[in-house]
Amino acid sequence: MAKITVMFGADPQGDFTLNQDEMRVGRATDCEIVVDNLGVSRHHCSIVRDGDNWAVVDKGSNNGTFVGGQRITKHTLKHGERVIMGKHSLIYDAHGSADPNDKKKTVAGMGGEMTMFVDQSALAKAMASGEAGAKRMAIALDQGGRQMNVALLKDETLIGSSPGADIPAKGFLVKAIQAKIVKAAGGHHLISFGGWRGVHVNGRKVTDAMLKPGDVITIAGRVFTYKTA
Image 1 (cartoon, helix red, strand yellow):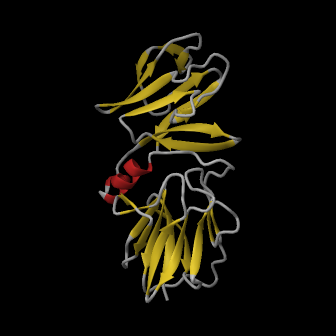
Image 2 (spheres, one colour; image 1 turned 90 degrees about the horizontal axis):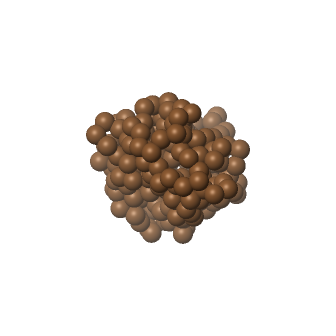
Image 3 (tube, one colour; image 1 turned 180 degrees about the vertical axis):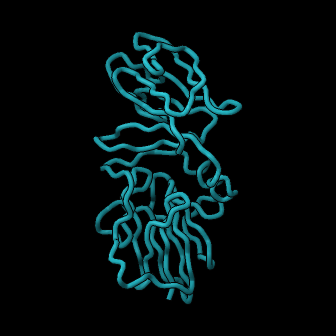
């Protein structure tokens, strides 16, 4: 018998015995392991029987499935290996089984109909190198009536109305890229690109501001909070 433990960061969210030839993982409710998170595709990956072993197979996910910091399409699992999918990960235990009294099927998170695109490669490499336990910062925002965090993993994180922006900020006269958050020694700078819509931090209009945990950024009525991930 073998099992998968679903993790959110360093916190275990649930154990699932591998008792079928294929165990689907994703945001859709028909998956055997449902992970309700915007960074996870509806049908993200599957854990499949592979002879005497088990393998993880990516199912065309938007943000990718990673093992050892590398994006994979299929990978035969070794005992203790971690599969990374957004902020969630799957730990493979070749000898374990889930508690039969644990009936949990859904792993809680940030749901929604549309997948939020994130820099999965950077996140996977950080987790593989052990940096995931270090202090990381994020932007908290409302997405379809749900609160979600976007981890600040890139050197520059773009905010604006463009589909290519890392953080969406739609609104009248909001520029395609209205602002960016830049990594700096000891934290992050917020840089505004001007235009008709101002960028405010804690109610004060800024062009370049060093952010502090808890700072509230406002663009065209949209509210973003700079906080620990």
